[in-house]
Image 1 (tube, helix red, strand yellow):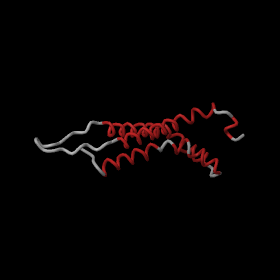
Image 2: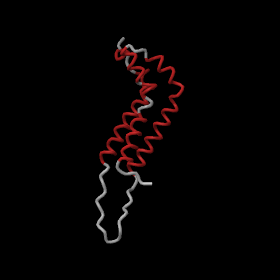
Image 3: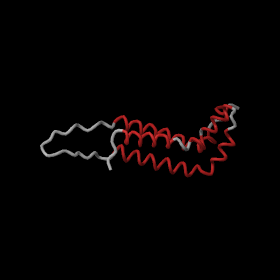
Image 4: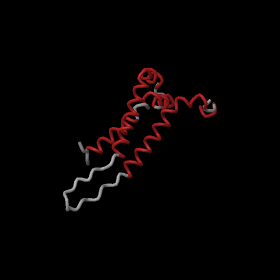
Length: 122
């Protein structure tokens, strides 16, 4: 099955949206608590599902890398002029950007204890 056009774009958008699922248990509650919205109770309710969110995120990032780096099949009739393949540079750069942000956000809960107290707004 070959995804092209809207199908590939939809798949990329779904991967990007689902890569932000770990934020719901790690970053959003901290941001909500700074805003005074009581995000800590929300964080505690989602904490048991964090490992599932992380696995789901990594799976979808893997799927995104598969679609971004798989070789394109050239389907041309013999003697026919083939169109040049579309560049996937923007898709690949965006995927690497999202991956970097995701890895930073996944590491954030483990880095918090080592941050200086002055940064926490003591």
